[in-house]
Amino acid sequence: MVAPNPFVICWNTTLVGLDTEWSLLPNKKAAVLQLCVDERCLIIQLVYMEDNIPLSTLESFLTDSNFTFVGIEVAQDIAKLKHEYGLECNKSMDIGRLAKRRWPGRFRGPSLKELASELLGIDMRKPEDVCLSNWEAKVLNENQIEYACIDAYASYRIGHKLLLGEGALNL
Image (cartoon, rainbow, N blue to C red; front, top):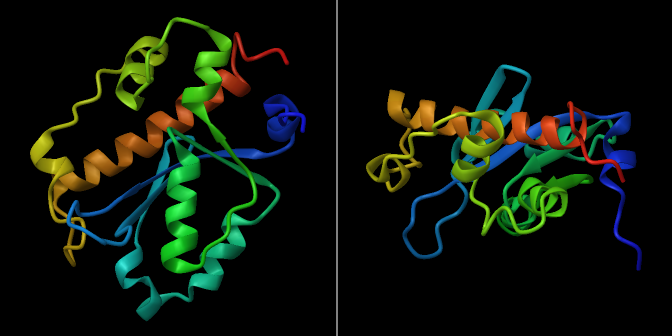
């Protein structure tokens, strides 16, 4: 099987940064889905979604061929969404793998924080108390909102740089 060409996949689509958050207790569902396009971020509290908006509306967006979802280990986030909420996603690209392909030997993991620093010059604050906070809270606090937006925004910007920006992958 031939690996998909990221350039072809993304040429006529809009990139969307994607990440999820959940409480680190055993068997906890993804509580928050973060999405970002350009400088616009959307935080969806999945644990409360079924009461307000049908999940089918979100799935229509996730399966729309006009969008390619990018993030670190994005396949794991998408698998979690499918397993826990039955949500499908058509197109995604792992920005960590793309960075390693673009610059072999430059990155270890890489983590989102490492890529943001190296590729964008962004110093991502990732306070442990926020990372480990209650993502199932009815009202997210300001630190959680900032954390969630920064993750999705950095994923979008890195994906854009790797796939569409100056010095993009020439595959």
